[in-house]
Length: 363
Image: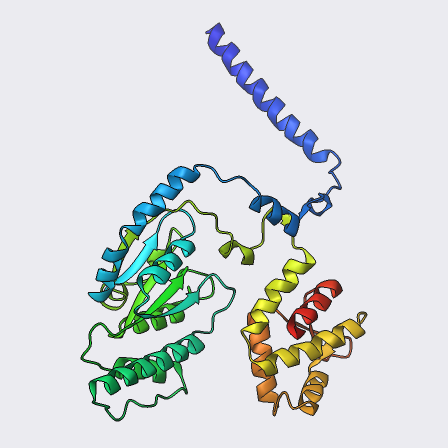
């Protein structure tokens, strides 16, 4: 009994000491230090250091890539049979797929989609594919001496119109197709359901073959059973390369680094270059105003409309609003109201980054 009493007293004593320690620690003075006070290395410097890291197991990796090259004829055969190729595994597959396309797909037209970019204009990509396929079918018909009417032109009003043209294009030559390479089909710019449905419809066209790569562990959740087996018609290939994601990683901020001015401006410039020239010019007006009025809350929307219309960059408020929607979607512009209640537009970049961005756009 005495042993049991002693154990209970020890447990009670431990409990009292625990809560007493918690009470004392809660009443103590908190540190005034912040995470932002830490001197974090510049992002550009960190990336340069990462690039200089010595590659290990070069011999083994080289042997592995040479083994993959022996599979190129098999991959071409699978494409000719109507399948799509999906590459997965640890490491960047960009170099491997590009080597396969440049060495084994020389008889076919190849279109590349970089899914790792911050934004991808799928309509422009589909338009380029449609133009390429149209010219290819024309040349095949001319060489065979039969030129079918009704397939000479194609509409470019919407994505659905372009897809309808691609599905309607027919040729007796089953070996006539366009290869579409999609680096990172699970990338942030095209992983939304609408983009995946568009790519699936593209893949189901009889004259289109998809060669794609994935890196996200949950990438297969992007597709349903119909998309996998009927539209993309994937053949899965496990091809770990152990190659660093040098190109793909440029557009993702490093956790242990501060965003440098040059890197921030470069990323914004890449996004803007995917927009129309008029949209870029509207953005330049806003950037120049922000640099010349650093103490203001931003440029009033009405002033931006007046300045843009004077230079014939927009024809109506609706046009300006469409440009502003694109800017906001890409997080290039933020809005807030000033003391007078006016809606003002501002670019969430430092003055140095904004100057660098204007230089990049003017080159």
